[in-house]
Structure formats: C-alpha cells, structure tokens
Length: 567
Image (cartoon, rainbow, N blue to C red; front, side):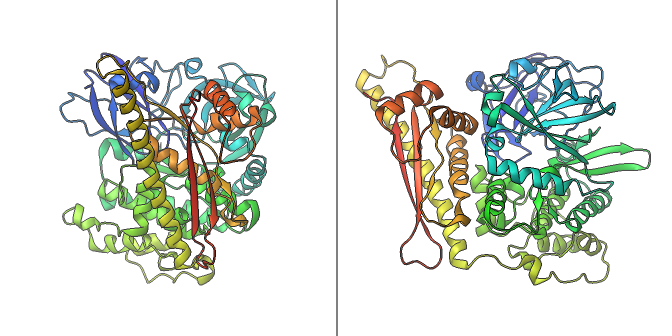
C-alpha cells in the first residue's frame, strides 16, 4: 500500500490508532499504547474499522491531552512496517497526534469554522481518543488558541455523571502547576445535528484546556525504546511534582499513564506535562453517586496502569496514582508495562493474582536500587506504597528514608472475601465471553450444515449489543457494576474475531429513543425493533444479586443471550 494508511480501532479500549506504510502484510500484530492490548490486524477485515488515508507525515504535530498518538508495532517480515502518519497536515500541525484529515468522513461533531457555544471558533479537527474528539479552537472572547475536547455521549448522557463531572472539573481547575495541563472551562453546545441527538437535551458536553505542542511520553517510548535511568529521572521528577500538586489540591488523577504525559521541547530542556486532570476526581468525595462514578470511571480507564484497588472497585486514594507512576517508571526503564494480557480485562485482573516481573529479569544489569523503588510503587496493598510522589523521587536518588504512608490515606477498603468476590466475578465474565463466542460459532456452524457448506452464503460476523445490567442487591456501592460489567464483557467479546460489538453509546441512545424498560427479557417485538435500530444479531441482558446468607459480599450474576432474528 503506497502513501496510504489505516485507522484501526483497539478492541480493548476503542482508541483509534493510525498506521501507514508501504506493502502492509495481510495480517500483522499491533499493540495499543493506551491500554497495552496486543491484537491482530487483518486487512481483509478492515472495511468496517479502517479508512484509507493519503499524505505523508508533517514535520510537526500537536499532542492533545488524553489522545492516543502512536502504536507499538513489532512487525517482522513487513518491510519498513506501518508507521504513524498525519494526513495532509494543515499549516500549523505538530508531532505526535493521530490526525484524520477528513472530519466529515469520520462523523466528527464539529466542522472547521463552526462557532461552538457562541465563543469558540473551530480551527481544525485534531484527534480522537477514548473520551471523545479534540479540536484546535480559538477563544473569540480572549483571542487565544486552545484545545476543545468533547465528552463522549455514553458519559455525557448520564445526568448524575454530568453533575459530578462539573464538580470535578471545578476541583481540577484548582490545580495550577507548571507540569500540569491547565483546564479552562466546561461547557455545552446545543445543536440539532444527528450526533447531538446522542446527548442529553441535545447539548454536547465539552472541556477547554491548554493546547500543548509536543509528543506524548508513550510516543517517545514507542519510537526510541526504553530510557536510561539518567534520562528518565528529570522527567520522573516533573511528573511526581505534578501529581503532588494535584494531591495537595485534593485531586486524584486515576488515569495516569505515559499517553497522558506530553513532552514539550523548551529552551531550558524538556517540559513534562501531565494531562487529563479534568477527568480526575476529588479525593475527599465519598458516598452516593460520587462513589459510583469513581469506580465506573476506573473501569473505563487504562487497564495496563490501573491499581489493584481500581480493578476491585475499592476507594481511590493518591496511592492509586503512586501505583500508576510506578508502572510508568517501569515502562520508561524496561520498555514495556509490567502486566500484559490478551484483553483489557485479563490485563487488569493479572495484578490481583500475579506479582510484576522484576525489571532485572527483563533488562540485564538493571539498577537494583531502582528495581526496589519501582516494586514498592507496585505493591498490591496501597498501605505499602510510598505516601507521596516526591518520596518516590527521593528514594530513586538514594536520599533519606521517606515517611511511611498514613493509614488514613491508603487503608484497606474491603474485606478479603469481598475482594475475592470481585476476582471471581471477573472470572465469570471471562467464562461468559468464551461461552458466548462458542454459542455463536456453533450456531453459524449449524446453519452452514443445514444449508450445505459449499452452498452456504458467506456469513458476516454476528453483532452483539450488551445492555446495562440490573442491580438487585439493594446496595448503592455496587451500582457501578450495572455499566461496568457490560463494558468489561464487551471488551472480552471484542477481543476475539468472532463477533462485532455494538458501541455502548449506540445502545444507550436506542434505549432512550425506544423507551425500553429495565428487564432481563425482551419480547419478540422489542428484539425486532432493536435489530432494525442497532443492526444487532444478539442482545445480552443481565442482573446481579447478593448471595443469600453470605457476609463477604459475594454476588450472583444471571445473564441471558437473546437472538433478535425471531419468527
């Protein structure tokens, strides 16, 4: 393929990754640097997830907070192999951004020249990431250029989530630090466009923030490999300083990763900027909807960097960011993240059952002192990690012993039994994914046998819509599972090549438009309507309840798979 490229969607976190190069093989492996998932790209299957691109990489680029900008592609026997590219770049483009060059073709929310909220003039579409789309825009009131980032409908359509999101943006704005990307404002834009119909009251939710010029740390590691400890330390100091500033303001990042760190070249050296604090939350908020969004958001985060307590649905404290910092330091000095898996869920669950491989097992001659510090950051028990990010830096420098973490900051939040219940629950999801794929494969095989293998028409991959589950426990603290479990199940199902998953925002939209009631069983008529509206072949519904007489918080999960092709 000459002067062309592909946009592929990571099956784990749905981040769009841009590949370009000549003579791409028909089948090759790629790795998402957002969630760490490895997956196979088969060009013959790309009609539904990729778009051809033209042009060559521009000399510069823009990295926008929270956007995926690169992919790790170990591609033997593929010539030069796919490389990152920017579609014909605008006059002011910058390195490190996944640019599509054709917003309309991707169904972008805004167009160049459009005035958003009577204030922000869209200059160009820049990138698409896990949380939404990013645009370069001009603030007409102040005459400044900034980044405008939309929040995806599946988040913005939840009134409770939006209310909490506004409060968290207010808290995040209090974090002012040289190494933190500034959050300016949270706004809405009312529109009658088809995309706006996915949002609550047709109001598109967006955040404005500082526009950064540079590439992400993930992009740097992807292109140049692991760093020496001497190279890494100045960047670690800056990242730690940013996290300390946030924690002092009562904000926990929750999604700290190398893709959320932008490296800007300055006269005085490289500036490391931690981004996406607007998607963080106040560390002092507890109970009710706050706890629900906290855990639900953790599930939507980046499994390769999540602390064990995030995977378990426990209370999120600054200790979770210390864990993520340890993962990033590991990645910077070893060249990979400590836990890797075939899917987002398996990657996340590994840290509950396995110890991270010591860096010295992967890098010959690795500094034993750095290894000790990194592994302490990655302790499964939050109480055993460092108390502050700056303590990590002091330890790396071999300074005096740092203070032990206080019990009030990282006390255990769940009993061992409850923790085990969630690990078992994750295992149930893994089993369900296998069973669901087996069921659909068997059904297709039966159809081929019935019609004759040679005469049977080509059968497209069946589409599956996973509906929100019902919470029958009567316990608000596990409300997050209603959306968290479907997301994890969707990730598991999409990890294989046997089925296609209907995007969550499409399912939410259909549920709202059709006025569907909560339930585990749809009538034939409803199934036919869902088939017409979503193009889905199967619908998964479910409910979970507490196991009677069990004091350790174990849950029973009941699931139902329905065929929309009814008679």
